[in-house]
Length: 117
Image 1: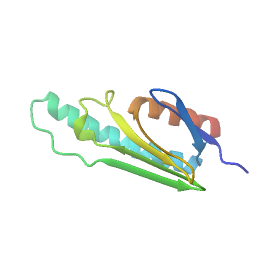
Image 2: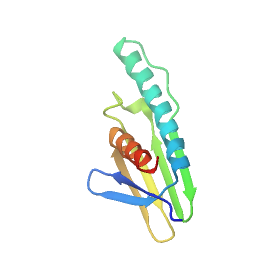
Image 3: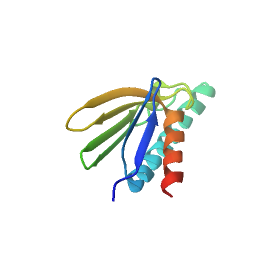
Image 4: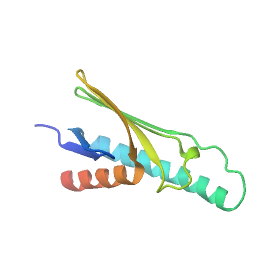
């Protein structure tokens, strides 16, 4: 049975690749932790205090011939809605590295999980 395709909508275009529902849930958990880090940073900045540095989010998935890496440093974004993630997607033939909006990644992941759920 073929794996379902996850489609990530990028600033210019989109990319689809094989992704497992379990990996999608793991990525969703990593993004939830990232959102909490972004909220802590935003709240500290809003109160006028210096926020304590938050740990960057680094998610990796390797399945079949596909490798996906998602990276975000929550310390550089003013709000969760402004945050972007660095996405690297590669297989034996091609490597794609690009930025995507965090909110768009959350939407794409939710849509994928609804389709496979």
